[in-house]
Each structure stands twice: as structure tokens, then as C-alpha cells.
Image 1 (cartoon, rainbow, N blue to C red):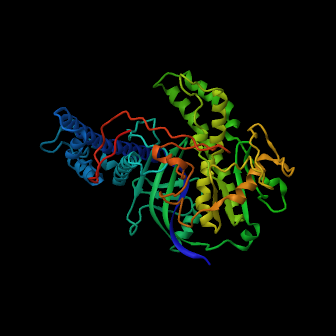
Image 2: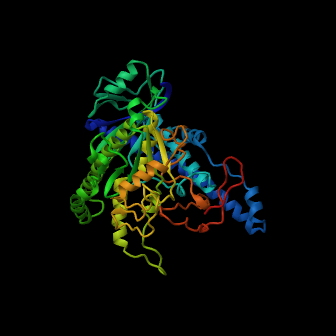
Length: 517
């Protein structure tokens, strides 16, 4: 039985702005970058002040733990930063500065030329970056360690900004099927059609919350976030139940090897070919990057060459996303349960350079393998399956990271400890089974994977499991160390984290701060 539920969905459109509109978009992106740096600067200043006061007490003979407890320097958040900016900002519309003004030192006198939400959303992003660092520092955030927040630099960060509006008087709305109205930008033409969004709005099933405008390569995109009332299937359909469970073995030779054909009665669809988007564009990328290396920094030719390199990389990303979305939707809609491995992509693609005492071997080959794995994007496949299975009534099952799926016979359970990556066929000495290595692994995944809980996973920020934040044995998460998939071996030993700074950062919630690693 279908259940109506209110979820957040984003509708992404490619924009076709006019030259005047393009200048406004760039102005908003620059304002958001400036606002983020301004907010982060105030936080960093408070952190430095706290460290100076703690160090002064330590120099006076106060124990370090007691000094940290005594010093309280609050880190400013969005409301305080916004009030402070309103007091000090200038205004270029006035012919002369007000009495007592700081003259040319007044910041952002152009604030009235952009939407106010470009500033407010940047302040929110700065708060989130700071809290992510705090959570990672305290061990409350899953995945790899989050470093100290960094300032954004023009030309080195993504041009993007986010706008909100009053839902009772919407300023962000589609105009027809081919235009999108943005506050202070106007009606921007779309390369795509907004028919799906318009029909949901007309039926009263959707409500626009915000829009994120960003530049990727040579394109500008608008991601319209909406609160949508959808009917989520409570159970798989009859067709999905008949197909049952499919095991998905993600790899490089094949994008995915399945335990049963993707299309019924079509044995060839058991293997999904790997398009190898990056390999197909290698020659063009090499030519464009050589042209970029011959230019002089700051020149117009360098700017043009950089745009060409960015355009090629963006086209590769778009083609990769198209293939992955098509495959994950077919898996989620055609089967009742989709079983995948709990791969640790960050560990699989770790560099093989080693150390000075024990340098890595075959570094160039490992670098090529890392590129091939990242081009296949197994982590993105897992992320998409997490929410699409919930949308279409199917379930996601996850196989334990340490299960030797490739070395285990899918017929009798015998394990081949001598199987290497060069062996592309699996031969069982117990029952005589001879099959493709990836197909054998897919059957094991379908048989031994465990269905995850029914809680919402991917649409929000509280994803319970992903390619980086899955539960790991031996307390590896506490030390911010993942474990790559090693079939038939025990988990690696943990290594205590290195600490480069004994001082800590003030906790905005008044709790005892954790040490800076």
C-alpha cells in the first residue's frame, strides 16, 4: 500500500542566460564567496584569540587543562555575524559616507546589488563548515577527517550561491516550461523543460524552498529544491517480487556484474559495460592540458585554456552521471532487493607511494587503477541506490566489507585462498564450478547480503551508511582510518593518530573541547 510522504526533491536545470544576466550571476557568486570568507574570518579570529589567552595562562604556570577550562571566547555564528556586518557595511548609492564612517575601509558597499539571501546562505555554509570540523574533531562525524575550514579563492573554488524566498510570495518560480524566475536576475531561459516541476506546482503537490545556482565547466545550472508530496510504495510491485534479489558486483572491467540479467531472458544484460568516460577523453585532455602548461599566468590565453580543460572535465562528469542514473534506476525498479558490497572507496584508491623507508612499488600502475576506480564511481552508485530503492518500493541489502565474495564458490561455499586479481575466471576445486569471477562474486553478494533498515537514508544529510562512513571493525572509525576491501584477511591494525597541535578550539556549546589532531 502506497504511503503519502513529504520529501525534499531537487530539480536541476541547465540555464541559458543572456550576457547581462551572466554578469548578475557572477556578481552573486562573488558576493557569496566574499560573505563566506568574512564569516570564516571572524570565526578564525575568535579561535586565535582563544589560543593566545590559553597560551598566556600556560606561560604563567597554569596547567593546560585548567587553562582551557578557564578561557571562554565564543565563536560568532550567523546571527551575530549578520548584525555586525549590518553595522559596518557601506553603501555605494549614497553620494557621501555617513558621519563617523570609516571611509574606504567600509566593507561591501555594493551589497544592495545582490540578493540578501546570497549573504545569509553563505553565513550558514560557514557555520556548517565550522561544525563539520568540530564534529570530526570530537569523533562524532562519520567518514574521513574534516580539516580546518579554508577560505575560498576566486578561480580556485566553485562559483555558486543559494537563494531563498518567502513561500507565501514566491520569487523563485518557473515561468512556462522554458524559463525560471530568479530574484534580482529575472527570467532565465532553460536548456531543459520544467514541465514536471510546473505540473507538480499546478496540482499543489510541490512547494519551492530554495534554488542553488552553480557553474560547472561552461554551463550554469539551477537546482530548485522543492518540498514534494509523493506516494512511496510500501512494498515491491508484483514484477519486482518475481525478479527477486539481484547481486551487484561493481568493478572496473565491467561497470557492474549482476547475479541475474538486468532484462529478463537476455543473458547478455548480466554484465553492464564500463563506458570508461575518462579514457575516451584522455587524448583531448592531454592536448588541452599541454596547451594550458604553455601559457603565462594571468594571461588571457591561460584563461581560455583553463576554460577548455574545465569544459572537458565537466563533459566527462555529465556523461558519467547519465550512465549511473540510468543503471541505478533500472536496478531499483526491476528488482525487489538490490544487494551491493560495502566498499571502502577511499581505501581502495589510496596512493601506493609509501614512505622513504618502505617506498611503494608499481606506483604508476596503482595510479592508473585509482583513476579507473574513481571513473567507475562505486560510491556514487551506492548513494543513488540508497534513495532510489526507497522511492520505487525495493530494498537495499549490504554485504559485509570483509566477506570474501570473489574467493568463495557461489555453489558449494569452498574458498580459493590463492585467487589473485589477474585470475578473471573462478574454478572451484570442490564442485568443479567454472564461471566468470565477477559473476560468481555477484551471486555471493545476492546470497549473503543483509537488508538495511527502513529508515530514510540518502535524501537528507543523516545518511546511515555510505562508502566512507560504514561501520568498521576494530574501532577504525575512531582513528579516522578506513579499511580497504581485503578478501580473506583480518582487519588491519590501528595506528594512533598523529597530533601536530596540542591546543584545542573553544566549543560553542560550552562542552569540554577535544584536542586538535
